[in-house]
Length: 129
Ligand code: HEM
Image (cartoon, rainbow, N blue to C red; front, side):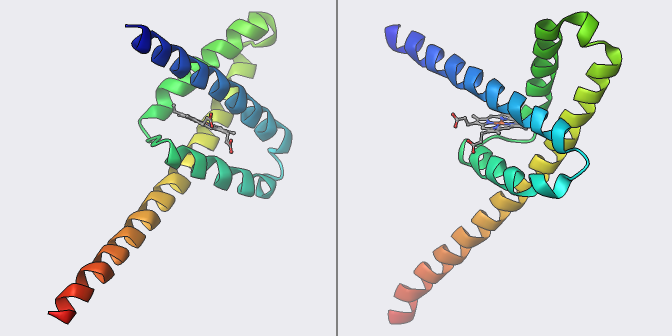
């Protein structure tokens, strides 16, 4: 039971940390929205990280919903009015689509590399026998 509790705590902490980095990324997106080429490298790094944590496209909706809810709660309805929230939602959707595509590309390229390695490895003993 202790181990389960501590696992849950570390997961909550992981998602707490993630919400900070994600919030920063969203803030960076707002800042550089006009010069998106500056975000390309950042998207690459985020996507690499996500793939290493097995993040999948279906995780984006729930994280987006929670993030937007948290932004509204923290900023309050006066600051985070409907117009502001629509802009955040649009920014999140845009980044999410970029990341989902990049992550798919990384996963496919890794799978192809694995397949290639596997085939090469398999063909050596067969060739010898
Ligand atoms: C638009 C959506 C998202 C953005 C902008 C975003 C942004 C980021 C950033 C900036 C990092 C840190 C990257 C680094 O350390 O190099 C990160 C890490 C991470 N993200 Fe996301 N993220 C998004 C969606 C998600 C989703 C849907 C999940 C699923 C639960 C997720 C889970 C994680 C995890 C587990 C890490 C690693 C945390 C760690 O290293 O401790 N992210 N993300």
